[in-house]
Image (cartoon, rainbow, N blue to C red; front, side):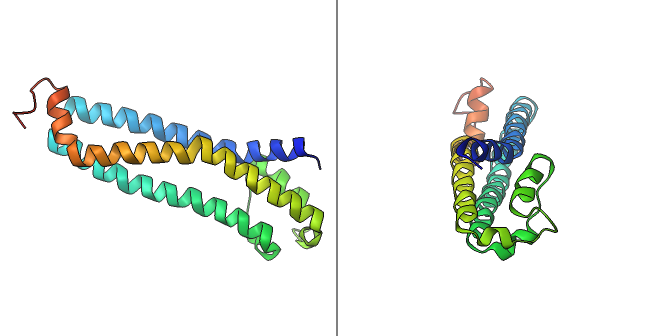
Length: 162
């Protein structure tokens, strides 16, 4: 397996996470727009608290995914419990080709390739997902703290009304 195949595997593994995060960003925008349009200032502010909680869970899940992949590359016994879907089945088949045995990862070259794969996957997710999660978390925190004022200002009623 060469570097090009490792890059393809990292892209295939990162695509579902990036797609789900993109859908979440759209949902974030639509729900905030609806709350700004039809909701009260207090409801908009409370929605910020809900977003913070959801984003902390998502951020934790994405970090657990990366830590799980790192632990697989260090301790091959974890590979049998890690499952892949759709395109990621290729990865499982490469490192456990027969009966999901993990003896292939005992080879130093295979372990190096797995480490390289995890490194590239983490870099792709860091650029596309982790930075976006931080931006949304900051926006949600500001919405939680100042959402009522922002709602009044955006609604044309001014700061003094709230």
